[in-house]
Amino acid sequence: MVAALLLREIQILLRARASIVNPLAFLLLSTLLFAIAAPKLVAETSHQASGILWVLVLFTQLLSLDAMFRRDYDSGTLEQSLIMADVPFVAVLLRIFVQWLGTGLVIVIATPVIGPLLGLSWAAVPGAMLALLLGTPALSLLGSIGAGITVGFSRGGIILALLVLPLFLPVLIFGTDIVNAAAAGLNYTAQIYWLALITLAALIVAPFAALAGLRISVEMQ
Amino acid sequence: MYFDSFDAFLRMGEHGLYVWMAYGATLLVLLSAFFITRSMSRSVEENIRWTILSRQSEQAAGTAQTQRQGNES
Amino acid sequence: MKLNLKLKEYWHKLGSPRWFYQITTSWVTFFGICALLLLATGLVWALAFAPADYQQGNSFRIMYVHVPAAMVAQSLYIGMGVAGFVGLVWRMKLTDVAIGACLPLGMVLTALALFTGGVWGKPTWGSWWEWDGRTVSTLVLLFLYIGIYALREAIPDRDLRARASALVSLVGTVNIPIIKYSVEWWNTLHQSASFSLTEKPAMPAEMWLPLLVMVLGFYCFAGHQVLSRMRLEVLSREATSRWVLQLLQGKSAEAGLGQSSLIDHGRD
Image (tube, rainbow over all chains, first blue to last red; front, side, top):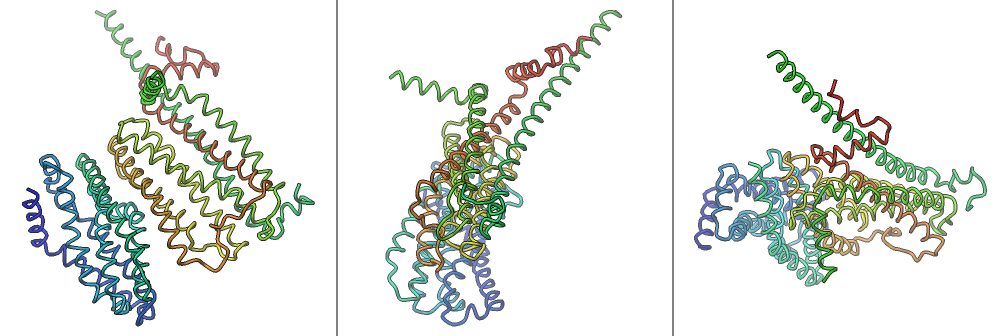
């Protein structure tokens, strides 16, 4: 049952290729903006690359989160799935996982390109990929909480950002620290553990909170 | 008293502007909160009284009307 | 055993708006008077009688308003989170009244903490604003408040608004210690050269006594304000009930307007 649901979700993801292409395009575009607006900032092996990369990743996530539940909400299938699913929690978790596939995983794969474009040193790229691999699931999980609550708002985008960015902060802090440490050649094991802990905690808490939010939103229809 | 004169009190050893800005803002916040809440309480009570009054005068008008109708018939 | 029953009884009563209104009548006055006394004493003490700091001089006095504001601002948010939790689990309507009451004061006190912090920083360490652990945490708290505020503005239905606010304040409150820890971590990496506000020097009694008075005064003030707002919201929600009618009648009678104003008006 879970496998069937997962398969269906992935099919939807692949059919709506925009949900994979758009985040990537946005990330690339904003990198371009930085390169134009602040060229010295993205000069070779910049110290700021880590921070800029992560902030852009956060913004990309925000944009992608807005659409996470929206199509189902608008078409009414969200309400149905919440009522009919045996274990709604699993359905939400699968949706989050697939959203991560389209956003977070894509970002991780794109890092060897985006990172150096922002001035990240090659030595830091593996560390950056690891940090993003651990951090982006947390972003998807925590972000789904905000997405669940705000899916019913017509202009919910800014409220989504307000609710979700404070949740993103710890991921941002440890994530940037890992990339900076990687760039400086320092050990970052402790930070990895902390980031992994955050992601695990998010995994436990977020689907329930997102589900609660979705239930509230569905009643707003 | 820590200060020798009222003037010294106001000056606060060159930091006067900052100290008084901070305390001024604090007093502003505390007093506004107090008065705004008080005015809100009063208008809530006003509103409820008006609603009760208008509902009762409607009822009274209703009973007066039925009484008149009763008298006429 | 008896205590258990007593507590359960108390808990159930908490769900009743009327009981809440009645029992808090004396509390509001109590908190109000305490707040007035403590704040009046504290303000005078802090401004005129407490010693100036050896290093910072008289700007140190700003601490006596900055610290209480920040403490109460944070406590109010945590209070909202606890209310949210209780509201989600036990479905008590009063918890939403509590959240709505804490929100405006909490927001304003957070802003005040940020402002007084900046004003303190300028003469003492030379800049209006430094990005350090304390400023980042307080700013995040402000955004947590603004988030709930925006959320409440966006949901017209009262029950849904209550559930959404409860959920968000609960999640936000759980996030607070995590943010504190990670910002501390961040701060150790990015420590600015200047003396940091986060360091707490050992304070002699002449300094922490007025601080204690101010902190208590701020808490009493917050208690007075939150209870007052909760009470007016309760009156507003229960406006059609008999007990509200009787209450307002009683107040009119006290004010000398007489019974007739509310009941017998229609008789002529």
